[in-house]
Image (cartoon, rainbow, N blue to C red; front, side, top):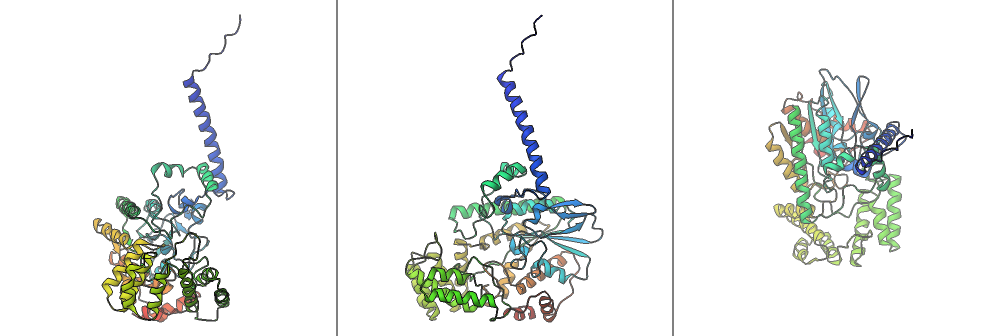
Length: 494
């Protein structure tokens, strides 16, 4: 008796078996990749996963504690909190690098530096049984912050403080993209094809009007999701506006670190940087001089030569970096008139500068301020930020945060932008408060922490903090290597 011939599989069964086999192979490969990632042998985090999408959990159980995961530590500071916090009050602080505490704390630091909002909150409430957990991350936009808030409200939080809007401009991720990023294999392929450092929020982009509307709509949606999810968990949400550096001209961004002044002279690295930039300027290599001096930081000795280098480039129709449009000779003339205190000439000529209209608006705003035409000045400077954010929060986004906070009873608005304007000369925040385009000097963070603390105590989350004198605050700063800056005493003594 002959054996029966095997029955041929139908095309449909072949497809099913093929899909099952492929699925098993992918599942096995995914498990291997994620095991290697947890062991620290593989880094699958993509650029999108550092700014827009939350690819893994922020915290994981470790005995009786919750600790930041290896994934989270690539962009956040290391934290360990008790699984059972008992009677302790737990407040999470999240958002972008402003909330994280740059330039005092950066994503690649294993431990939190001192000088940002969380640092000063801990100082203000040192006598109370409270923990402030810094879960902010440099460069991340509101879609990722929203996903972080969704996790935080499940971790026995008594309050969540959110300060995010400097990085808006990334494409809003679809549901499919968010799901795909949960798989290690996809992340590995994504990180290989698009390494970290590309694909993040466009820090220096000038959005079109349609793009700005799209970004605003996405931002509002994300804030409302944070409010809805925190309400469902019964966790108070403290939604902060973000201070805007209205007097940032936009050409100060350099490749090197921001220099935080300790003294106005005598720091060897700064002096060497300035000497190099001046030598390049005298050799008429204006592009090299601009790039060098921009990296010297906010030292006043660098600013004058840096501006002169830019003016020389603009008069030739050139820019400091490839791909950047030159504001042109007309704007260079505006700057020259401004430095000569001819503010009426700046205002009169600004509308004619067709090569650099945003720069012209900015310089006319500064001129209006010098003439004490302050409402017009603020309107012009805010318009310049709307048109060219350069890593700053656009005023329209702060307006959205105010509106969202008003719509939810459990959301408290913490208007840091309004406070910064109250403290600033003429109500126009600038470099005396900021260490760069969007980050504050430590003295500015002190006041922002005080405002947040007042909101937390005002809503009954915490008891009022013990007041600290300006001398005590300066002593704490000096103990952590932060000496006085030109703005400190004036602000703190108020």
